Length: 429
Image 1 (cartoon, rainbow, N blue to C red):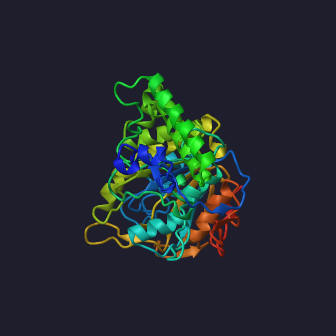
Image 2 (cartoon, rainbow, N blue to C red):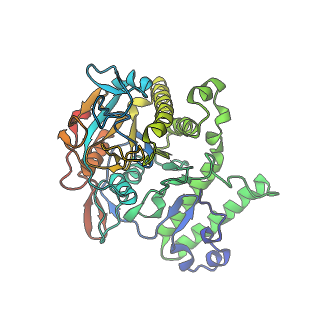
Image 3 (spheres, helix red, strand yellow):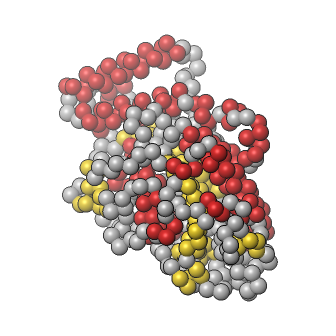
């Protein structure tokens, strides 16, 4: 995780006390909670109360070994299929727990997102539109964290876990600015440097914060750029709130039976922590599970990865439902693309964006719905083709955010979803 212990994340006391505006208007990053000097005017959105968990299967999981198996075909691979709680719909035999919970889940089997290079594909799926040289768009998760934010919350609006090195990417804040950056947890599931420096008492720590706030307010009254200063004050309050909420990141606070149910794998721990953060009203949590890029030994790698995903995802869905959180929490399972129908000479599957699958559950989703269809070999979409922009519009709509709403980036109005995007209404309630 990036934190303010680094010299580049500090505000020098002379810059602050000297009253120079230059010492304040530059962008800072305080553990992923930063401030940008140039935030656009946005269209007001009314939606509140919904939350989101993104599960990112980094590297590109195989739709053949998960949501869209093709048994008995040359492209199908060695695994059998099993029936689900949806009559007529089968999944790979590696997902028995998910199979019995399909009443909560909708699957889109007909994505054609064209782009099959990791970085470009991840950008496309995460942003929901092709990149433009003239404008840096924010990712869907960043937009949602802004629009679903809890007023005056001391917690981050977006927490992103990516503790594996493979495929690591940091969510793009785009023109929304660094004050919408997520809290990044890249080394462990607990934020670093939350404790005061050694030897500093709690009284002294509070006294220093009171002095900083006093000088900050005085500067804001006397100088231009008061909005910038208030932004810094808000960022500091987020940090202090995070320090007071350190217990949320301590899984020892959970009963042993719950921890054992999720399992001790990193993915299991992160999903349990995601539930804790959702319960504490953090709007958006992203969990990245790496090592799905199966150019070699696709079937052996999925034999290991899919059962872990099947178990943990099912426990998460059950836990959210039991706590009354699933109805208000959208849970998404995404990758940058799927895997090829052709099995290569290394018994692997390569990148494939022409016909692949995503799954959703929870807020706004009509569980038990299967949308779209691929052909018999999974080589092309047969029915219900959807692209990355359609997916983005559907995600926004699911939590009650109008995808046609606009931000104002300078003088340019920018709709949240691409102008020609189509909401996949068939999977929404």
